[in-house]
Length: 276
Ligand SMILES: [Zn+2]
Image (cartoon, rainbow, N blue to C red; front, side, top):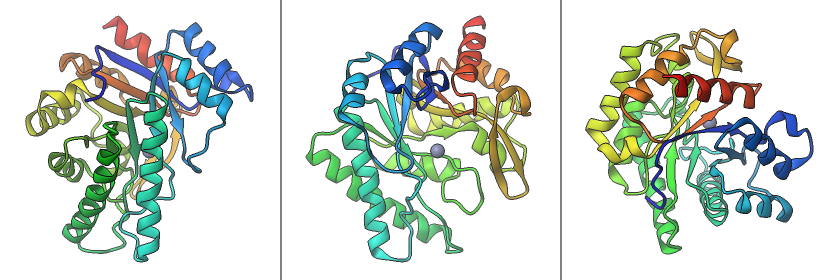
């Protein structure tokens, strides 16, 4: 869309741990030292970034994505909560766009035991308001509902593909670890990963594979889905076959590593991908 990606980029979810409390400038130096490609701005507790950090991000030359606040539910019962949720997504998109960002992602909604078709219509209506507000601003950053990790959260792959068909600037953020956890351990083989890319390519076109946004982490899960993130080597998540599938489909875009050790697993992913 606004910036086509020429390769698959590997990003950390937030500032690398080794930067300690030294902020974004130190974080980008670590990314450079480790050969990583960028980072996801974690606005999960609010869209806030200092002027100093803004400058560091803008000047970094890195691939930048952003994660909207967790406190979002486009299907909340109270209209004021719905409005505030949409506003948080818009603010994330505006800030990320100002900083040269590529894409933003968010957990769109909870079902709240409502009929799934009604929830879809509600998310769709709110997404229309969000994309219209951003279009007025000529903001064409990718807006990405994320595949979620629990059965109570709106956002399985089908729902997100269906929503993406409706809007020019909307595409999926595929959190492969969430999909694995959501279905209590499935979606973890080469064939299953290939089927996901095939489905997205068939339904949303080649542009969706050339402009991908993914999340990967080790993950602990149970019958109700996601429990917590783990480092890749401590989990059963089959990242090697996933990266083989990325390669087989020539997927380009941003892979964000959300493991607790952030930069180490990002590097593990990138190194393995480049070895293929
Ligand atoms: Zn997320």
